[in-house]
Image (cartoon, rainbow, N blue to C red; front, side, top):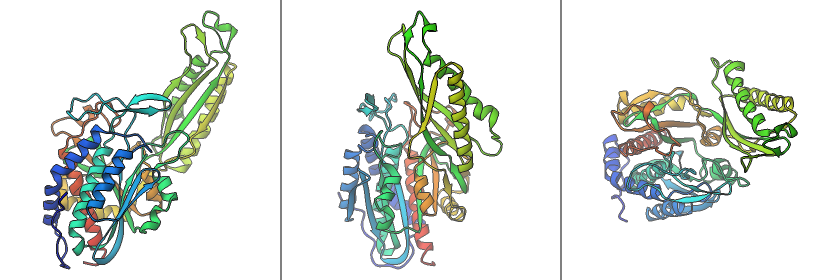
Length: 427
C-alpha cells in the first residue's frame, strides 16, 4: 500500500485546508475498510481478523505495533517531530449478536457464539466505521508527523459492548494491562456514529454525556408442577412477570427524574421448556442506567427490595446480582470540551455542531475518561431528509450508516486531534 506523501521538515502549522485535503484523499479507502469490517464482524474478545487488518495497516505506515492487549486490542504511537503534548485516540472494534436485515451489498451473514447459542453477528452500532476512521486518521497523522508536535497513542479497543461471560475485556482490561504507561496522555478523544443525528451534524456536551451502565441478573426460584395443576407448585414465570412490572415503578413512581434520568430495563427472560410444565426457575437479564454514584446505589437498593418482596408475596425467592464490571458515566472535561467545540466548528461550520442532551446509553470509554481529561462526541449517519426519530436505532437489526457521515467523522477527529497537538506547543 502506498502512503500519502510525507511532508518534509517544516515547523509551520498544518492548516485546516491540508487536513481536509488529506481526509478527501483517504475517503474512498476508509469506506473500503469500513465495508470489509462490516462484512466480517466479530464479537467482543474475538476480533481476530479485525485486529489483524488494523495491525497490518499500522505496520505499513511504519509504526511499531503492539497487539494482544486485552486479548485482541491493537496499540501504536505516532511520534511527532516536535515537542508537545500526548493525545490518546480510541476506536472500538467489536460487533453485536444481531442478525442483520439491511439490504446493503456488504450485509453481514456472519454467525458466532453468544451465551451458548449460535447467533447472527452484525456491526449494528457502527464500530466498523470507528475503526476505519481511526485507521484513516493514523495515516494522515503519519503524513504530517514531520510538522506535528507531541505524539498520538492510537488505541483500537476490543469488547466495548462487553466481554463474554466469564472473561474480562474492553477498556478496563486495557488500562489494567498498562495502556496509559505506553504513552502517558494529556487528553483522550473518541467519537461515535449515531442514528439520532442527520449526516453532517455532530453533537457533544460538557460534563455528564452518557449514563453509567450496570448489567444485572435476577433468578426467580419457585417449585415445579404440572401446567394443569398450578396450585401444586409456585410459578416463577408469573412471579417474574410481576417483578418486571414492579421494577418499572422505580423510575416512574419512586425517583425524582427531574434531577437526573434513570432507566431500568429487563432485556431477556428465560424459563421453561414445555407448554404444560411449570419450571422451577426463571432467569432475567437487564441493565440500569444512572448518571451519578448516588443515583446508582439508590436504584440498586430499590431493586433489591422490590424483587425480594414481590417474590416472597407468592412464596418464591428472587436473587439479584450485578455483573462485576460496570461502566461509570462518560463525563466530558468542561474546559477541554470548549476547545474541541471550537475545533469542530472550524472544521464543519457553526451550524453543524449541536449540544447533546444527557444520553442514557453507556460506553466503557468512561474508564479512560476517569483517568484522563477526555471529550467524546457523536457524528450523525442518518441520511439528510430522513427524520432521525424514524431511523433504525443503533443496536437495531436494520441500523444503517450513511457513508457520507464517515467522512464527517474522519474530518472531525483529524481536526480536533491536530488542533490539540498544535495548541499544546503554544502556536
